[in-house]
Length: 255
Image 1 (cartoon, helix red, strand yellow):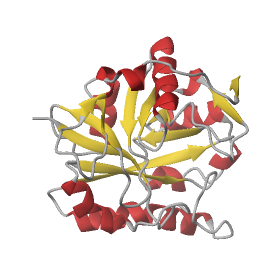
Image 2 (tube, one colour; image 1 turned 180 degrees about the vertical axis):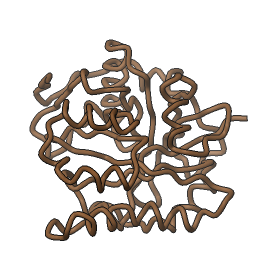
Image 3 (spheres, helix red, strand yellow; image 1 turned 45 degrees about the vertical axis):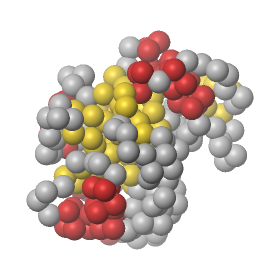
């Protein structure tokens, strides 16, 4: 039996671009075949819904509330884990293995550069995975890549077109990165979905980090997920997700 986990999910409590309360995700994601989710709301450096003028502890409290509401609603038969999506210059990283206490202990985190954040994440027992490395959007002026701060790369992001995912896949292969997949879901009705498949259940975020770093998970996807009766499929078997069909149109800046 395979267990599918959503690794990239946003709640209305902390992500300004989401329309879905954390608690509302549980039944919906179960119906789609997931065994659990990792809530990765946009941090204060990104598209955050948390007011910037709040004291640090209050900002952290609101930031974590989407995760906490989802976890409370899930009960014991669905896994809800905590993550972070951290933004620099449009390049975003999924941080796993950290806690609310870690955030409270690092009130100056926003003043750190990529390498300093990477060091702090590792000191806290976490990992740093670049989300959608080759994403292109109207609000982005360049693609920023920093191989030196990556424990892995998100090679399938369901909110990206196939050609951008293929570029991310090639980037991961070139640098020998562990590969991740996720939906980047913000609201119900998203057509395609993704995630990570494991041959055993994941119960804690530390367990996820350990299994991911051991290479025991694989990125998977499902097209037309709301209507398809097929199982999630490995990204590695999809030619359109692994073979470059066009290059990036934005400048690529290596750090």
